[in-house]
Image 1 (spheres, rainbow, N blue to C red):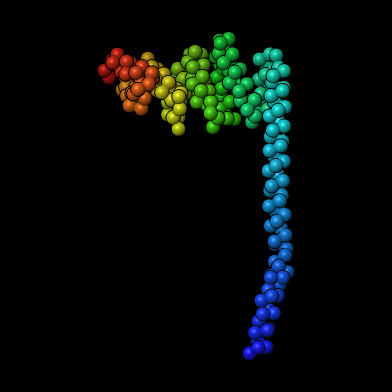
Image 2: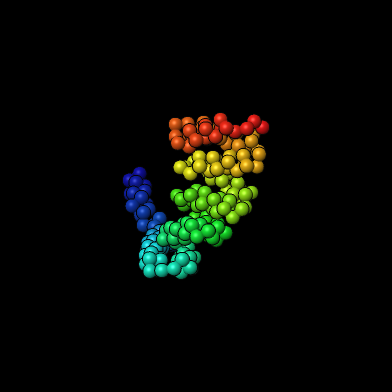
Length: 205
């Protein structure tokens, strides 16, 4: 009995190194993988910060709109590029280059669809389309703003603008639905009050 216990204790004592010996390769591989992921993440973060810094420096030094747009395309993916595209589109709109503004907003939205100012870009694009006489495109753009999820400060503006174009197209039922939704969701705001006033003057279908 004593011999059995001594043998069993010897096996228990020997178990940890035996397990490690059997599994040394996967343990080492797993450790190396974790280290590689950590190093890769740190390297990626460093490159991202460096590129953002380069973009900011280059865009700040640009003196013409064309130069800024060219650099913004070169540095797509950076915050500096995103803000430059929005600023450039606004300048193009003010210069009455409505098609150019719509294209610049489209470039922003295709590269920054989840940006905090994405709905602002949608609103700007819709305004540019309307100014260019592209009413159907503008209506689709304003609807996209008004149905943005999650809602933001631009959502009710999109609803009211879409309702305005529906009114121009004499689609009063669609306009009424959008305005009613705006009143319901933004009752105690400027937009809710504006929508309520628009509803009062809306012709019957």
